[in-house]
Image 1 (cartoon, helix red, strand yellow):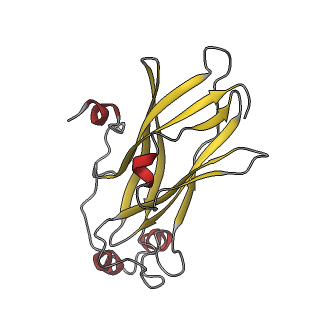
Image 2 (tube, helix red, strand yellow):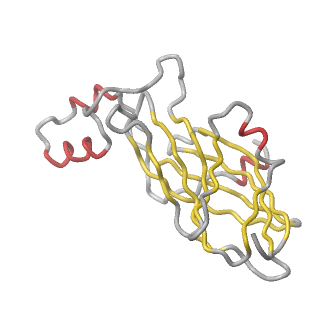
Length: 196
């Protein structure tokens, strides 16, 4: 395991055990007369709408974009579905104004099976110092014609400020689920400046 993988390991919840894997058809038939289970299945979209999964694409999750929302400014959207987009992120830093409030968001598709406990884990570094953060994104059913993609907005953050906070930052991010399957891992960078 590389040092990036060690740093990007999601935090474990004590006492939590990942449940047994089931197919969508098995979930549909599971305890059909149980009202609370029926509502849970509906919340995941199981049994509603036609699948939009690409049978030629084996991925369970397709991360389409990552965005940055700043009140009063146009969103910065990084299209991760474009060929070569992920590979070019590290060399194309974007700017965040010191002290600015911002929120990250992601758009993604789930296909073929239920996605359980997806998390976004990132490690940000500047001059040898690192900061790890994790955001629970949740569990999702496969996308359908009624729900062709999901959008998840992260908790609001505030960019650091002051002379020592300004500068160039590098980051490594990972989308990972309860089964510890990595759906996307990428390096990127940003600059914190006095102004936009």
